[in-house]
Length: 205
Image (cartoon, rainbow, N blue to C red; front, side, top):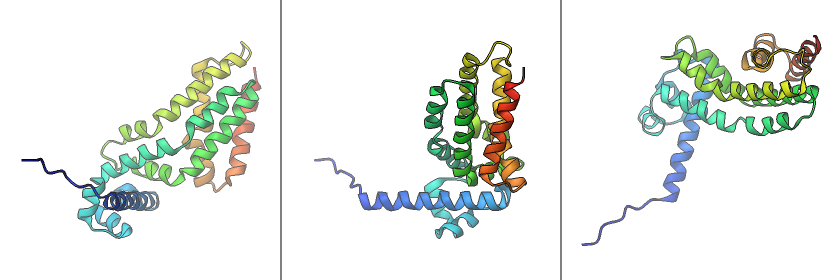
């Protein structure tokens, strides 16, 4: 007796993918606005226009949803393209300009996700793991930039580890958030200030 093949409907798969995307977008918006701890699955369902059962079936628990938001944002951040520009730069000033512009683009484009993560840390089941998940590739990219800067900087400049720490201080998510979210600076002003500060510091013996 021939085995019955299961039929996969492309239209049904597309509808499921759209529902999942809507759930993730709605959750991102709510987490960023209210904070992870103040949002329920029912809230996400209402925002997305689906049932709570559909949320669990499509995207999982609230923690699963936040993890997927973070993973999707990392893939979509464009950091690999930005790092190609950084590593192609032939002098320290060009490296820092590429870093300022590239990290600005990533933080601005993913601002809602960064807010969602930031506001989740105090109430998340494992905030430390969440922060590591969200920033591991970011930190690795800045370490690579620090190694490249050391090949261009004079011997009197800071060591690679210190350079990486400084790049994280200037161009990591906290620096951008302090200026833009907490102090209301326009992104252009924040980019110019962080670049100017980095240039002045690394030029100082």
